Each structure stands twice: as structure tokens, then as C-alpha cells.
Amino acid sequence: MGFVKISLVFIALTSPLFEMELFRIGRSTQIKRVVAIAVDGIREVEGKPVFSVLRKKMAELGLNTFWYGKSDGCVPSQASNLSLPAYASIFTGKVQENLKDNHFRGKFLYKTLFSDYPDSQLFSAWPPLERIFNNDIEVRARIFIAGIGNKPHEDPFVMASFRLLYNPSNRFVFVHLGDADEFAHINQWNAYLAAVESEADYVHEIIQTSEIAKMKETLYYVLTDHGRGEKLWQHHGAYIPESHTMWIMEISPYSQPVMGAPCNHIALHDTIASILKEK
Ligand SMILES: [Zn+2]
Image 1: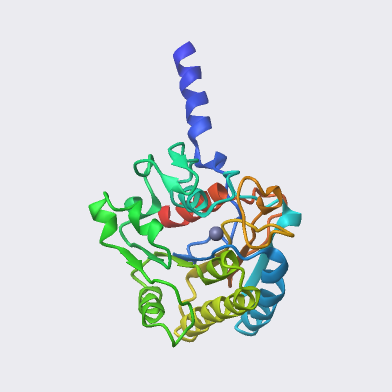
Image 2 (image 1 turned 180 degrees about the vertical axis):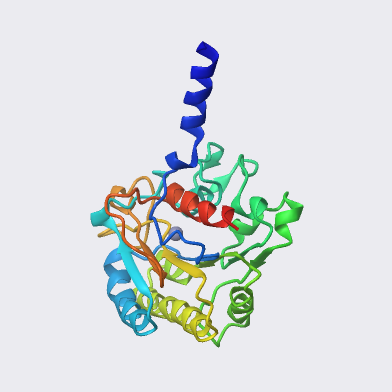
């Protein structure tokens, strides 16, 4: 009897009901794919107005959009406020213990969405994201690195990412765009702002083209990995407490908001995994 009770408790604790899902999107069978676009290091204060314009365009396409940010308690799952820990949380749903600053010591300690779901693709503007997959032959074959340059129609690598995104057999595509963060770090304010605009254009291009092709089964996330300093806007990290924030925009025809749901990178992983699981 004691054994039975223990088993029931175990089942309850491991049941999917206890997963920390970010949002309960219309969890019908309608959503079959997830496209997540990380716009590295864009502060909410610059991102929100630019992406508000995008939200209006999405509404014209009949898509619901929701913005979650600082006032919703959105924070990175790891307090280093650095990129690699944030992406590790999204890919694995766990906090990585083998990180030193922005570098892995070794490789992922946990399975990633890319190893769990072979119909997934990673497209990155940032070589460290490729390097952490170096030892994983199966996943490595599905990693594409762009180099810098995120403007639609100007960068051939960006055009290559479009081909991945428009292929419906890729059920999960993660795109990393890095220009805004890179320009901020080298103190180029105007180039940082221009990168925010061009990354929003990239998102618009993807979704508009997909919608015209009637890819209604796709759920889109646009997200940041961390915030930036206020005065020290060029940088982010554990030593800049106000950079411990992030934002996520959700876009789909079926999305509904859930107030008070957890908003962090691990919750985002769990939400994506729950969709991919339901093939
Ligand atoms: Zn950075």
C-alpha cells in the first residue's frame, strides 16, 4: 500500500500538467510548428515601439499578437544576463551548471530540442551557438551559421534562413539575429537602432510570406535573451542588475493570453516542447 501511494505521488509530480508552460495557446491540433526568432540584446524600451508597428501589420493579416515584458515579470532563467546561458535554457529547459561567463566548459549537459526533434533547425548569426553543438554529430548537420548582417534581401545567409523557415517539414526553427547586440557592444547607437528596425523587418518578411502561403499552423515567438544597462546601454551581464529582464512576443491566429503564467526561457522551452510532442 505504501508503495502504491509513493508511485501515485511520483506520477503526479512528473505529469505534464505540472510543466511550466508560458502560455496556453489554442491547444487544439491546429498548431504544428514553432518558429522562434531571437533578437539578441534588444532592450524593451527600444524593441516595444518598433515591434508595435509589426503588431499592427500582423493584425492586418488576421494574427493575434501578445507582448510580455518587464511588467509581466519576464526574466532570463539564469542571472548571468548573458546570451549563451539564455539560449541553453531555451534549448534544454534546464539551467546549465557548466558555464563560465559566456563559455561552455564541455558541452550541453542535457538533451536539447534539436536532439529530441530531428525535424528542427537552428540558424544563427553567432558562432558560439554552433560551437556548443560541435560534438553532437546528429545535431551539427542541422546548424547553419550566418555571420553578421540581418537585412532581408541583402544578406545571402539570411535568404538561406528563409528557405528553412518556409519548409513546412521543419517543425521547429530557431533563428538567432545578432546585429543589434553587436552594434551596441561597440557603442554604435544609431546602428543599434537601425538593427532593431531591420530585425523587425526580417520577422515581418517571414510571417507575411508564410501567411500568404497559408502556413496557418505555425506559432511564432520573437524574443530577447537579456536586457541591457540603462546608462551603460552598451553592455549586459551579472554586474548590470537591470539587464536581468527580457521580452517575448507571441504571434499566431490561435493565441490567447494567460495572465500570471511564468515568463522566462525555461518556460518558453517547456511550451515549445509541449507543442512539438503533440505531433
Ligand atoms: Zn551581448
